[in-house]
Length: 178
Length: 178
Image (cartoon, rainbow over all chains, first blue to last red; front, side, top):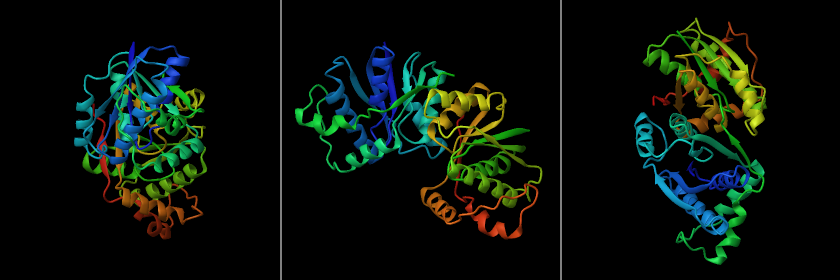
């Protein structure tokens, strides 16, 4: 059993695809998913979507999953102080053999979390979504102005139709297995 | 004496600012600068600009610097095979106490090179250019359709005016000093 910890940017894409790869292709048992967010409004919006994606589109097949937010408290890593705060927030949360998905968010965040993952002997992973599909998903997302805040145990049936097609069917997942 | 090795994307921004920070603020002695490029056309264009920036805007003050390209041979890290090729290209090139600038290029590349840097006990660094300035520099760049290929030892005087203002005056440089 391992955790999946993922950085998040303004697009929800990546972490669901990584989860699917891990449980379906690699037969990993993942129960806990943690999403690292920033204070950016669009990132908070993406976090609400990620919650819907897991609750509405994944939980039926994998009822054991739990998804939680790790708010980093910063907007972005733009100073040594931001980097320190970001790392303090994550300190002790990444453990040996966890999977750390660096797909989402700004580059500095991904690099910082990758270095912490390596330090903790966790595995670093990313899911690449083809540009055209990525653009399409983000365009669909930009048209939704109000993301419903849902209860994590229950997905209103109507949401499935609107959201589950935001999961890429053509993602490629890569392990940074150095 | 240490090398500065930097990933490069479609924008030349970052590596000159990192060099300036290292030699001026940290009193590091950097003589060799290596730029990791991809096969992407815009990246090759950015590489020509980086060469002009160092030759025309930096070399006068620091005549000892040498700048060279490390062509990664890939377009981007989109598969495990790309990752392997990328890492093979860099293998043995990063040494203890070198500086590795992860500012440019796609996220997967930056993460891969950061992990290799950590492995080699090199120092990981990034320069953040304010969004507005970054946009302005890239707009200026997009208007130049033909980048002159210059001899590294000599800068035609006319180029200084056109190019040296592409170096950010407000960059912030951060060491990933975990």
